Amino acid sequence: MSETRKPTPDEALTILLEGAERARAGRPERPNTSVDHRTILANGQNPIAAVLGCSDSRVPMEFAFDAGYGDLFAIRTAGHTLGETVIGSVEFAVAELEVPVVLVLGHTSCGAVTAADHTLATGETPGGSVASLVERILPSVIAARNAGNSTIDEAVAVHAARTVERLREASAILTEAEEHGRLKIVGAVYDLATGAVSLVH
Image 1 (cartoon, rainbow, N blue to C red):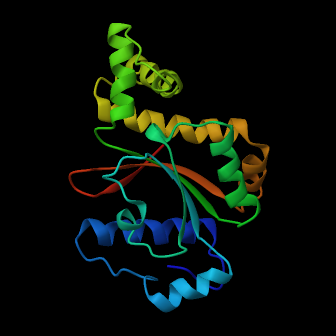
Image 2 (image 1 turned 180 degrees about the vertical axis):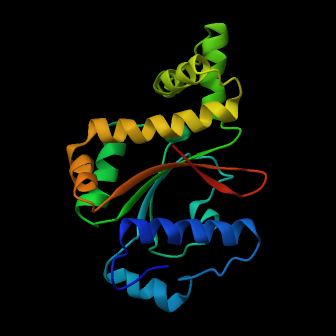
């Protein structure tokens, strides 16, 4: 998946989606997983995408996109929630590593979105710092319900799309790169049952 020439945003997104389709179909190529390739990367990295995804153990990014060492700059938080350090990590990937794509990856049956939905329905807030996760996801669940989307998976798609918009709103670095055609920011949902990756808008 890694290339000498950095792919354009459209090319990089195509590479990601083609890898996801191979993984879904059970035909992974396992690119860039050799010991030699790993050794070369000790001198520097050149990922083609930053993927901001959920920490869920069922969504290993390199497997989901049939990627290898050095292909993805992976950032993971429960429910792909944003905070200053998360946004800073995405900005680093864009400004320093010049990734042409930032992909926000939600997934079906997301526990973090389910927790936010439970809080909305019952008024009960989880304990500890989990409450801060729920607070960041609640606006997406509310927006989904207001739009007539009643299922958790529909709320997941709305949350992925809203996270894309939040990145644009929160970061001048990302907005400028996108406006100048150096970057594409997209949202997607990974289906736990089928392995399919579907873009959301």
